[in-house]
Image (cartoon, rainbow, N blue to C red; front, side, top):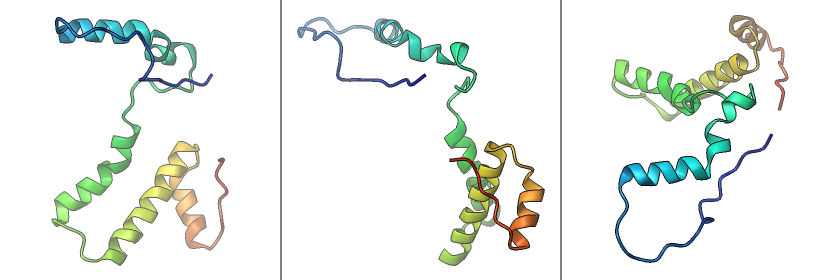
Length: 112
């Protein structure tokens, strides 16, 4: 199931009385009702949309602990390792096993 939003579609309204935030929300929910409840019909769609936040959380924690990254090389290494760990988790691969194999020089091919 492919879902997309076309924010440009919908009936054009004449300039007039400004609608309330609640009314705007209600209209958006009606217009995008299939997309809003997509997680109920397709188990591959997550309940929330916080994956991007989860992916950057470790970066922010590292910054908070040390105050900053010391070098560009250090931040690139950190991002590469965190990206590898995140991809392994998303693909259902054991993270420690994936890191062990990477250190040994083996390549793990993740699904595209």
